[in-house]
Each structure stands twice: as structure tokens, then as C-alpha cells.
Length: 221
Ligand SMILES: O=C(O)COP(=O)(O)O
Ligand SMILES: [Mg+2]
Image 1 (tube, protein in one colour):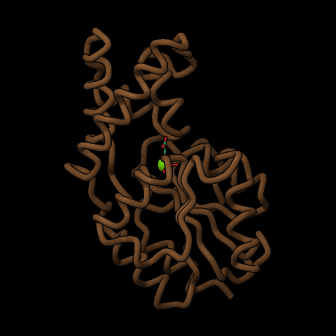
Image 2 (cartoon, rainbow, N blue to C red; image 1 turned 90 degrees about the vertical axis):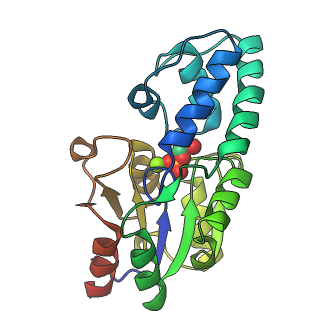
């Protein structure tokens, strides 16, 4: 592996375990629209593609489902309001995240957070959980015209950092992260504890903990 000088990290399912708050907000939205609650595990399988897709999927109870325009608009407004009110009630960094970020930072690795979650929610979560200090740049799903699996956000980070794609490692938990990294030409590591079974996806590395990522980057020639 060529040496890594920057790491981009996904937020939901990678840095923070946010599913309890996301699921409660999605069920509060469903209740407001007269729908029965869904199990947290079911809602977890709908996360990864950004807020609009989560609302479509949660309203239709179908990963490929699309709600009708009026119920989607009511759902989105409702979800945003509920989620804003419970953003960090139960959301916490995964074990090893603070240690891993601190190790990467002390190795001189430049860090970006590249998430499909809207920027304002992402920034607020990073601030409140004391993680924002590690990141030079945060891109949300609404920061650029395209989000993951598009390579655009990762290309944007490389440009801002002035580095080539093969020198930036993407660390995530889903197919969106893997596809974005492949399309951008970045090596990719996936974490096993996130919201999707990553073994079949074909990442360059699968790790159980962000400290292992810091070790990999540290030991790269
Ligand atoms: O908002 C989502 O659906 C997922 O966000 P993530 O890109 O941080 O996993
Ligand atoms: Mg994720």
C-alpha cells in the first residue's frame, strides 16, 4: 500500500452509533402519519443513503419503496423536527473511535468526515460528542450536488487537501462508502460493527475497531 496521508470517515455506523435516535425519530414520524411503529432492526437496514431515502424507506417499509409526494413531504418535515429534538439523546461514539481518531491525528493524518447525513445534523453531532476537533473538513449529504455512492465528496476532500486519491483511505460501514471509494480511486476499509453486513462487499480491509485502522495507517510503508 502506498502511504496514507489522509482518512475520510463516514459518520452513522462508523463513528457514531446513532440508530436508536434515528429509529425513534422515524417511528415518531410514522406515528404522526398514522402508521404503526417498525422494529429498530428494520429501520437500521434503511440507513446509509441519506435522509430523503430513509424517509421514503421508513414510510413505505420497503428498501426500494418511494412514498407519494405529499406523504413524503409531510414525512420529511416530521422526521427533521423529531430527529433535531433527539439528535444525541442516545447517540454515542463506538468503542475505540476517540482513541482511533486521536491516534490518527497524532500521526499527522488529515481527517475529513464524509457522511450522507445532512450537514447541520452531522456537524451538531460531532460537536456535541466532542469529535469535531479531529476533523479539518465535514461534508454532509447536502453539501455538494451529489452524495455517496458518488465519488464527488471524496474527490472534493482530495482536492481540498491537495492529495491524490490513492493516498486517502475511506473508512465506512456500508456499500455507499465502498462504491464511493472505488469510484474515486481511494483504498477502503469497512468496520464490522455498522449498519450493514460488510463481509460480502469486498473491501480492502475489514476491521472491528477504529484503533486497528490507525495501526494500519501507521504501519503502511
Ligand atoms: O444519513 C445516512 O443515511 C447515513 O449517513 P452515513 O453516510 O454517515 O452513514
Ligand atoms: Mg454509515
